[in-house]
Amino acid sequence: MNNFSDYFENVKTKKHWEKIQINRRAGVVIPLFSIYSDKSYGIGDFYDLKQIIKWCNQTGISIIQLLPLNDVGSDFSPYNSVSSFALDPMYISIKDLKGVNYELFKPKLKELKKKFKNGNLFLDYEIKSEKIKLLREIFSGSYIQGQNKFIKFKKQNKYWLDDYVIFKVLRDIHDVPDWERWDDNIRLRDENELAQIYKDNENQIEFYKWVQWQLCEQLSYIKKFANENSVLLIGDIPFLVSRDSADVWSHQNYFRLNLSSGAPPDMYLSLGQRWGMPPYIWENVEADKFSYIKEKIKYASKFYNLYRIDHFVGVFRIWSIDNSVPEEMGGLQGSFVPQDENIWEAHGRKIIDKMLEIEDIMPCAEDLGTVPDCSYRVLEEYGIPGIDVQRWKRDWNNTYNFIHPDEYRINSVATLSTHDSSSFIGWWKEEAGTADEELFRRLCYTKNIIGEQYLEITDLLFNKSHPSETRLLWKDEINSIEKLLKILKLSREECYDIILLYLESFNEKNKFIEFLGNENYQEVSTGFQKTALGKTLKSNSIFAINLFNEWLSLYEDFLNIFFNKNFRFNYPGIRNNSNWKMVIPVNVDSLQYLSINKTIKQMIEESGRNVNE
Image 1 (cartoon, rainbow, N blue to C red):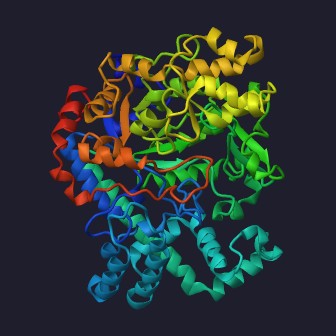
Image 2 (image 1 turned 30 degrees about the vertical axis):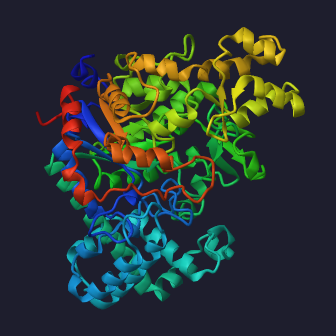
């Protein structure tokens, strides 16, 4: 292992590391919407995290990474929030509201519990509107004016709070929630008009502020509880924000409203991605001294010890698609903004330096996808952890073998999978050793391999028995580039891109088994899961943080559930009925009784990541 102290004591984030201490840690990723307890109502709430924290303390896990908790829009994607400051009311613990006599609302809560039963495989997001409805009733019946903490909260958060609450009221008033379709005087923020609306809806505005105060009090308490139990919290702060958000409406000059951000095509997503969030006009953000960025991080520091910048590579440049391009084209017809590669590094450094002015919270980076070289240099120099996903840590320039964990970046988070990927067992079952069918079809199309010829070639190259409809499993006998070229009837020069796809995916399972240490694994098992998890723990990375369901897959009953359901939280670039709705089938109140807890603790102790030892 490298000398961690020598490295992290000589980076630009030295002061930030001193706040959290330089320790190799193991962690867990929790999408709060995916958990439940006996006390929660249809969805995980902030106080359910107490049980997760206790479980972490029991197993030696010392970091909890939370997916974004910001107020979300109609698609309920945590990465498409209507505010990058405000927390979502659906996560509030109604039993723990400040200044409220809980006993008065017991009958209402019983009705809520009956309607939204815990333990379903998929989340019913109607719980959000029902919780808000009940909160309105509580506010009207028991709210007491003049609570000092509430008054202080409103003063301290004026930067974002006033715009957010009036935005929420305007969405309630208008039949059309999309602010870009509102009347010009509201859309363009006429001061007199907004002042009148504020006056006419004072009670409703006060309600939305009260809810945000209650949420702030609760999540601040959870951070305090976690830290007292030697657990750090990582908050996920999306780099981008929804087009239909209070942020964009109130700071329209900060955003390129004619463009949509996304990602270019890759071997996993043949059409790339189109997210819909507008890219920044950084000149205007800078003209305001980056106050928007700094205030966002400052507010997050109330709740988290560290923050993860989703799509970190966007600080250097971001893939942008004109809004006139048909949505079915995904991210195909886009370009990077800025376009000049020579300014990317300086551009990113300027933004990161401003982020680091907030010293109470440590940054981490999600640096996946198409990553510019400057990103790796900057992260190493600054000491900001990126993310090293086991299945993607390969020697992409030579053998395409999996990289030994000792070669992972010291400034990284090692992990089996992400919330945007398949689970480890899902990858092994359906993706390992395969090529994306749509990508292969498109590459063949560029070489005029279509129709019957395309069908004939796929029959010769790929195994029909593979369970996935979107992945193509290479036949074992296609064990050389020469055999591939013979079937394609093309030269190397004519199909370099297909050769690259072949090299990246052929024989992938055998390469991974060799990476694990030539273990005799062909089928999924808890032993297989344990060995793969163990590799992340023994890596050179400062942190090893895995999804909650990956840890639970050490238990055979859970492993079978996750295997059969192809458990995953999100299919990026695809709209379906399961994204952001998957519920982990375990009551968090029972975590302390799991037989795998001793196994997890032993694994963490053996890897040197138990900070309490």
